[in-house]
Image 1 (cartoon, one colour):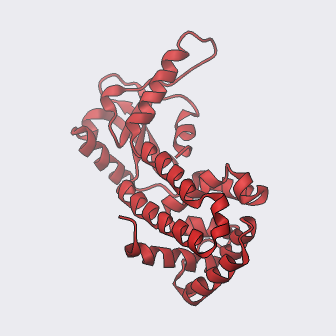
Image 2 (tube, rainbow, N blue to C red):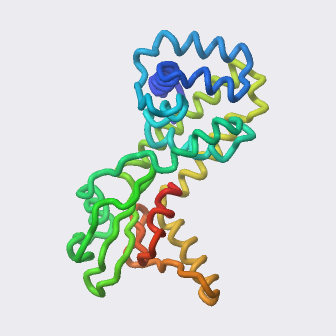
Image 3 (cartoon, rainbow, N blue to C red):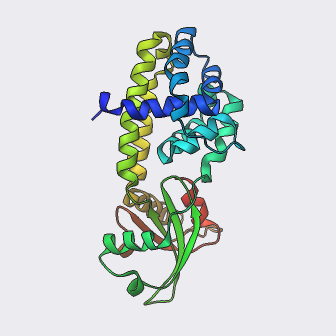
Length: 259
């Protein structure tokens, strides 16, 4: 539920933005009104010590979003496509968030696959690699089908990523409400509508069956087109958290880094 129980996440967000220097940069990029700038400093500065340090090698806003985790990284990815909202300079900085998360352990990926498909990974694949690409929502492994020897790409959602995203999205709604309440002039940017759009995008990406269906449709539509080598979906090895497709050079990292 959206509400006061998210206040701690909001405090940690403000503290991290303050500690990394991202607060000033973000407010300037958004051309925030004076009332919001003052409120942000009053609410953020006393709690700065609670914020994450992040990677000092990164620009301030990128540093803060990376430190706060997958939902914030994904939000930054979307904002990187909106220079009309955050400005061209900040949008350019945010583009590095496309592949900023480290992979999670292969053992966890195998457990997700086994739980989702209800078959031990060793029975499905004769070979299963370490992650070849990782992003905010999922990562990709190269594998070999045990029954046919075909090389495939296996995309797996991060464990508990759905729960983590939903909690942070609730916090985003609270932040949007606070921003609109403190500085009514910001309503021209439609903060809550931005969060609603973000929520819709993420909820679709948290169900790999939707992506598999779209990929299957694209493959069918281009089946007779010369020059297209579209990976084929392995429908029996797909679920909400797992998607398997034929291996094509460059396809795994391209699809994974979209998420």
